[in-house]
Image: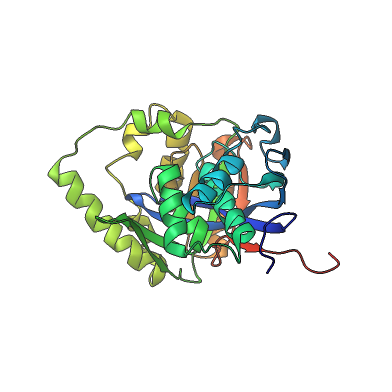
Length: 311
Protein backbone atom coordinates (compact mmCIF):
# COMPACT_ATOMS: atom_id res chain seq x y z
CA UNK A 1 0.00 0.00 0.00
CA UNK A 2 1.18 3.54 -0.75
CA UNK A 3 2.01 5.78 2.20
CA UNK A 4 -0.36 8.54 1.06
CA UNK A 5 -4.02 8.26 0.11
CA UNK A 6 -3.57 10.77 -2.73
CA UNK A 7 -5.24 9.54 -5.95
CA UNK A 8 -6.25 6.29 -4.26
CA UNK A 9 -9.65 4.97 -5.38
CA UNK A 10 -11.96 2.58 -3.54
CA UNK A 11 -15.29 0.98 -4.40
CA UNK A 12 -17.96 0.56 -1.72
CA UNK A 13 -21.20 -1.41 -1.63
CA UNK A 14 -23.72 -1.19 1.24
CA UNK A 15 -27.04 -3.06 1.67
CA UNK A 16 -30.41 -1.67 2.66
CA UNK A 17 -31.63 -2.53 6.13
CA UNK A 18 -34.94 -2.97 7.88
CA UNK A 19 -34.87 -2.17 11.60
CA UNK A 20 -37.20 -3.09 14.48
CA UNK A 21 -38.78 -6.08 12.64
CA UNK A 22 -41.89 -5.56 14.73
CA UNK A 23 -41.09 -5.99 18.43
CA UNK A 24 -37.32 -5.40 18.33
CA UNK A 25 -37.52 -1.62 18.60
CA UNK A 26 -34.09 0.09 18.26
CA UNK A 27 -32.43 -3.32 18.67
CA UNK A 28 -33.00 -5.73 15.77
CA UNK A 29 -32.04 -5.14 12.15
CA UNK A 30 -31.87 -7.14 8.94
CA UNK A 31 -29.67 -6.52 5.89
CA UNK A 32 -31.49 -6.80 2.55
CA UNK A 33 -30.28 -7.30 -1.01
CA UNK A 34 -30.74 -3.85 -2.51
CA UNK A 35 -27.63 -1.67 -2.51
CA UNK A 36 -26.02 1.73 -2.70
CA UNK A 37 -22.71 1.61 -4.58
CA UNK A 38 -20.06 4.30 -4.84
CA UNK A 39 -16.59 4.96 -6.11
CA UNK A 40 -14.48 7.37 -4.07
CA UNK A 41 -11.15 8.88 -5.12
CA UNK A 42 -8.86 10.95 -2.89
CA UNK A 43 -7.98 14.33 -4.44
CA UNK A 44 -5.93 17.33 -3.40
CA UNK A 45 -7.14 18.85 -0.15
CA UNK A 46 -10.09 21.20 -0.62
CA UNK A 47 -11.35 19.67 -3.86
CA UNK A 48 -14.84 18.12 -3.93
CA UNK A 49 -16.67 16.49 -6.83
CA UNK A 50 -19.91 14.58 -6.20
CA UNK A 51 -22.19 12.91 -8.72
CA UNK A 52 -25.28 10.85 -7.85
CA UNK A 53 -27.36 8.50 -9.97
CA UNK A 54 -30.26 6.23 -9.11
CA UNK A 55 -32.87 6.46 -6.39
CA UNK A 56 -33.31 9.90 -4.84
CA UNK A 57 -30.53 11.42 -6.94
CA UNK A 58 -32.32 14.77 -7.28
CA UNK A 59 -32.72 15.10 -3.50
CA UNK A 60 -29.11 14.48 -2.47
CA UNK A 61 -26.79 17.47 -1.98
CA UNK A 62 -23.59 17.51 -4.00
CA UNK A 63 -21.73 20.05 -1.89
CA UNK A 64 -19.87 19.77 1.43
CA UNK A 65 -23.14 19.01 3.26
CA UNK A 66 -23.36 15.62 1.51
CA UNK A 67 -23.67 12.94 4.21
CA UNK A 68 -21.08 10.61 2.69
CA UNK A 69 -18.54 13.43 2.36
CA UNK A 70 -19.21 14.58 5.93
CA UNK A 71 -18.83 11.00 7.19
CA UNK A 72 -15.49 10.55 5.45
CA UNK A 73 -14.22 13.75 7.04
CA UNK A 74 -15.50 12.57 10.44
CA UNK A 75 -13.62 9.28 10.08
CA UNK A 76 -10.37 11.07 9.19
CA UNK A 77 -10.79 13.39 12.19
CA UNK A 78 -11.24 10.34 14.45
CA UNK A 79 -7.74 9.11 13.58
CA UNK A 80 -6.13 12.56 13.56
CA UNK A 81 -5.34 12.70 9.84
CA UNK A 82 -6.39 15.63 7.63
CA UNK A 83 -9.07 14.63 5.14
CA UNK A 84 -8.20 14.74 1.44
CA UNK A 85 -10.30 16.22 -1.30
CA UNK A 86 -12.85 13.79 -2.66
CA UNK A 87 -14.42 12.63 -5.88
CA UNK A 88 -17.57 10.64 -5.04
CA UNK A 89 -19.62 8.87 -7.71
CA UNK A 90 -22.71 7.24 -6.19
CA UNK A 91 -25.26 4.90 -7.71
CA UNK A 92 -28.12 4.49 -5.25
CA UNK A 93 -30.53 1.57 -5.21
CA UNK A 94 -31.94 2.04 -1.69
CA UNK A 95 -35.20 4.02 -1.61
CA UNK A 96 -34.86 7.23 0.40
CA UNK A 97 -37.14 8.13 3.29
CA UNK A 98 -38.96 4.80 3.10
CA UNK A 99 -37.71 2.99 6.22
CA UNK A 100 -34.96 1.00 4.51
CA UNK A 101 -31.95 2.57 6.19
CA UNK A 102 -30.83 4.97 3.45
CA UNK A 103 -29.19 7.42 5.87
CA UNK A 104 -27.52 4.61 7.79
CA UNK A 105 -26.27 3.18 4.50
CA UNK A 106 -24.77 6.55 3.56
CA UNK A 107 -22.97 6.73 6.90
CA UNK A 108 -21.65 3.19 6.54
CA UNK A 109 -20.61 3.90 2.94
CA UNK A 110 -18.63 6.94 4.05
CA UNK A 111 -16.91 5.05 6.85
CA UNK A 112 -15.99 2.13 4.60
CA UNK A 113 -14.67 4.53 1.98
CA UNK A 114 -12.51 6.20 4.64
CA UNK A 115 -11.31 2.79 5.83
CA UNK A 116 -10.20 1.94 2.29
CA UNK A 117 -8.57 5.31 1.64
CA UNK A 118 -6.72 5.17 4.96
CA UNK A 119 -5.38 1.64 4.46
CA UNK A 120 -1.70 1.56 5.31
CA UNK A 121 -1.89 4.81 7.28
CA UNK A 122 -4.53 4.14 9.95
CA UNK A 123 -6.74 1.18 10.86
CA UNK A 124 -10.48 1.39 11.44
CA UNK A 125 -11.57 -1.83 13.15
CA UNK A 126 -15.10 -3.23 13.13
CA UNK A 127 -15.52 -1.84 16.64
CA UNK A 128 -14.38 1.59 15.46
CA UNK A 129 -16.74 1.50 12.49
CA UNK A 130 -19.77 0.62 14.60
CA UNK A 131 -18.90 3.28 17.18
CA UNK A 132 -18.43 6.02 14.59
CA UNK A 133 -21.55 4.99 12.69
CA UNK A 134 -23.61 5.08 15.87
CA UNK A 135 -22.24 8.49 16.81
CA UNK A 136 -23.36 9.83 13.44
CA UNK A 137 -26.66 7.95 13.10
CA UNK A 138 -27.76 8.13 16.72
CA UNK A 139 -28.48 4.44 17.30
CA UNK A 140 -26.94 1.19 16.01
CA UNK A 141 -29.98 -0.83 14.84
CA UNK A 142 -29.64 0.15 11.15
CA UNK A 143 -25.90 0.64 10.88
CA UNK A 144 -25.02 -2.75 12.42
CA UNK A 145 -26.67 -4.86 9.69
CA UNK A 146 -25.45 -2.43 7.01
CA UNK A 147 -21.90 -2.99 8.24
CA UNK A 148 -21.98 -6.69 9.02
CA UNK A 149 -24.94 -8.21 7.15
CA UNK A 150 -27.47 -10.81 8.24
CA UNK A 151 -29.66 -10.39 11.29
CA UNK A 152 -28.08 -8.25 13.99
CA UNK A 153 -28.86 -7.61 17.61
CA UNK A 154 -27.46 -4.21 18.62
CA UNK A 155 -27.06 -2.68 22.07
CA UNK A 156 -24.94 -0.10 23.85
CA UNK A 157 -22.99 -0.80 27.02
CA UNK A 158 -21.01 1.58 29.23
CA UNK A 159 -18.16 1.75 26.73
CA UNK A 160 -19.55 1.56 23.20
CA UNK A 161 -22.22 0.08 20.91
CA UNK A 162 -22.06 -3.67 20.44
CA UNK A 163 -23.61 -6.17 18.05
CA UNK A 164 -24.17 -9.86 17.48
CA UNK A 165 -24.66 -11.17 13.95
CA UNK A 166 -26.90 -14.19 13.39
CA UNK A 167 -27.55 -16.26 10.28
CA UNK A 168 -31.15 -16.27 9.07
CA UNK A 169 -32.98 -19.52 8.31
CA UNK A 170 -32.95 -20.19 4.57
CA UNK A 171 -36.75 -20.54 4.63
CA UNK A 172 -37.22 -16.83 5.42
CA UNK A 173 -38.16 -14.93 2.26
CA UNK A 174 -38.39 -11.12 2.64
CA UNK A 175 -40.54 -8.88 0.48
CA UNK A 176 -40.80 -5.12 0.96
CA UNK A 177 -43.72 -3.01 -0.23
CA UNK A 178 -42.60 0.55 -0.94
CA UNK A 179 -45.08 3.43 -1.31
CA UNK A 180 -44.54 6.65 -3.20
CA UNK A 181 -44.81 8.68 0.01
CA UNK A 182 -41.92 9.22 2.42
CA UNK A 183 -41.58 9.54 6.20
CA UNK A 184 -38.75 11.09 8.17
CA UNK A 185 -37.40 9.15 11.14
CA UNK A 186 -37.74 12.20 13.39
CA UNK A 187 -41.43 12.55 12.52
CA UNK A 188 -42.06 8.85 13.09
CA UNK A 189 -40.32 8.96 16.47
CA UNK A 190 -42.12 12.13 17.60
CA UNK A 191 -45.45 10.30 17.96
CA UNK A 192 -44.10 7.67 20.37
CA UNK A 193 -45.05 7.72 24.04
CA UNK A 194 -42.15 8.48 26.42
CA UNK A 195 -43.24 5.61 28.73
CA UNK A 196 -44.86 2.21 28.27
CA UNK A 197 -46.72 -0.09 30.62
CA UNK A 198 -45.07 -3.09 32.23
CA UNK A 199 -47.57 -5.32 30.41
CA UNK A 200 -46.56 -3.94 27.01
CA UNK A 201 -42.86 -4.13 27.88
CA UNK A 202 -43.17 -7.80 28.88
CA UNK A 203 -45.19 -8.49 25.74
CA UNK A 204 -42.45 -7.08 23.50
CA UNK A 205 -39.66 -8.82 25.40
CA UNK A 206 -41.40 -12.16 24.82
CA UNK A 207 -42.02 -11.47 21.13
CA UNK A 208 -38.46 -10.24 20.55
CA UNK A 209 -37.07 -13.42 22.06
CA UNK A 210 -39.45 -15.49 19.96
CA UNK A 211 -38.47 -13.53 16.84
CA UNK A 212 -34.84 -14.58 17.16
CA UNK A 213 -35.95 -18.22 17.26
CA UNK A 214 -38.34 -17.72 14.35
CA UNK A 215 -35.76 -16.04 12.11
CA UNK A 216 -32.94 -18.47 12.86
CA UNK A 217 -34.73 -21.79 13.44
CA UNK A 218 -38.53 -21.79 13.06
CA UNK A 219 -39.98 -19.53 10.34
CA UNK A 220 -43.43 -20.98 11.01
CA UNK A 221 -43.50 -18.84 14.20
CA UNK A 222 -42.94 -15.54 12.38
CA UNK A 223 -46.53 -14.28 12.56
CA UNK A 224 -46.73 -14.49 16.35
CA UNK A 225 -43.11 -13.38 16.73
CA UNK A 226 -43.65 -10.07 14.87
CA UNK A 227 -46.43 -8.77 17.14
CA UNK A 228 -45.63 -5.39 18.68
CA UNK A 229 -47.07 -3.03 21.28
CA UNK A 230 -44.35 -0.37 21.52
CA UNK A 231 -44.34 1.65 18.32
CA UNK A 232 -46.41 0.46 15.36
CA UNK A 233 -49.89 1.28 16.69
CA UNK A 234 -48.65 4.69 17.86
CA UNK A 235 -47.33 5.47 14.38
CA UNK A 236 -50.56 4.38 12.68
CA UNK A 237 -52.11 7.86 12.65
CA UNK A 238 -49.05 9.29 10.91
CA UNK A 239 -49.00 6.43 8.36
CA UNK A 240 -52.63 5.28 7.83
CA UNK A 241 -51.95 3.56 4.51
CA UNK A 242 -49.00 1.67 5.99
CA UNK A 243 -51.06 0.64 9.00
CA UNK A 244 -53.91 -0.54 6.79
CA UNK A 245 -51.59 -2.66 4.65
CA UNK A 246 -49.89 -4.22 7.69
CA UNK A 247 -53.29 -5.13 9.14
CA UNK A 248 -54.57 -6.52 5.83
CA UNK A 249 -51.51 -8.72 5.40
CA UNK A 250 -51.50 -9.95 9.01
CA UNK A 251 -55.21 -10.78 8.74
CA UNK A 252 -54.25 -13.14 5.91
CA UNK A 253 -51.54 -14.79 8.01
CA UNK A 254 -48.44 -12.91 6.81
CA UNK A 255 -45.74 -11.65 9.19
CA UNK A 256 -46.02 -8.00 8.11
CA UNK A 257 -44.37 -5.13 10.01
CA UNK A 258 -43.50 -1.49 9.49
CA UNK A 259 -40.01 -1.38 7.99
CA UNK A 260 -37.88 0.81 10.23
CA UNK A 261 -39.64 4.12 10.77
CA UNK A 262 -41.84 3.48 7.72
CA UNK A 263 -43.70 3.97 5.55
CA UNK A 264 -42.59 0.79 3.76
CA UNK A 265 -43.96 -2.57 4.89
CA UNK A 266 -41.75 -5.62 5.34
CA UNK A 267 -43.15 -9.15 5.12
CA UNK A 268 -41.05 -12.01 6.45
CA UNK A 269 -42.60 -14.86 4.53
CA UNK A 270 -41.88 -18.48 5.41
CA UNK A 271 -41.01 -19.46 1.85
CA UNK A 272 -40.93 -18.05 -1.71
CA UNK A 273 -44.45 -19.24 -2.47
CA UNK A 274 -45.90 -17.41 0.50
CA UNK A 275 -44.01 -14.31 -0.57
CA UNK A 276 -45.80 -14.34 -3.91
CA UNK A 277 -49.11 -14.73 -2.09
CA UNK A 278 -48.29 -11.72 0.07
CA UNK A 279 -47.50 -9.69 -3.05
CA UNK A 280 -50.90 -10.58 -4.49
CA UNK A 281 -52.64 -9.40 -1.31
CA UNK A 282 -50.68 -6.14 -1.34
CA UNK A 283 -51.42 -5.60 -5.03
CA UNK A 284 -55.13 -6.02 -4.37
CA UNK A 285 -55.10 -3.79 -1.29
CA UNK A 286 -53.03 -0.92 -2.74
CA UNK A 287 -54.38 -1.23 -6.29
CA UNK A 288 -50.84 -1.51 -7.58
CA UNK A 289 -49.67 1.85 -6.22
CA UNK A 290 -46.89 0.30 -4.06
CA UNK A 291 -43.73 -1.29 -5.46
CA UNK A 292 -42.96 -4.86 -4.38
CA UNK A 293 -39.27 -5.66 -3.87
CA UNK A 294 -38.58 -9.40 -3.74
CA UNK A 295 -35.36 -9.49 -1.76
CA UNK A 296 -32.95 -11.87 -0.08
CA UNK A 297 -31.16 -11.46 3.22
CA UNK A 298 -27.73 -9.96 2.60
CA UNK A 299 -25.16 -11.96 4.59
CA UNK A 300 -22.00 -9.95 3.73
CA UNK A 301 -22.86 -6.43 4.81
CA UNK A 302 -20.91 -3.46 3.50
CA UNK A 303 -17.76 -4.05 1.48
CA UNK A 304 -14.85 -1.91 0.34
CA UNK A 305 -12.18 -2.78 -2.19
CA UNK A 306 -9.73 -1.21 -4.56
CA UNK A 307 -10.79 -1.44 -8.23
CA UNK A 308 -9.53 -4.50 -10.07
CA UNK A 309 -6.62 -4.01 -12.46
CA UNK A 310 -7.89 -3.03 -15.91
CA UNK A 311 -11.45 -2.51 -14.68
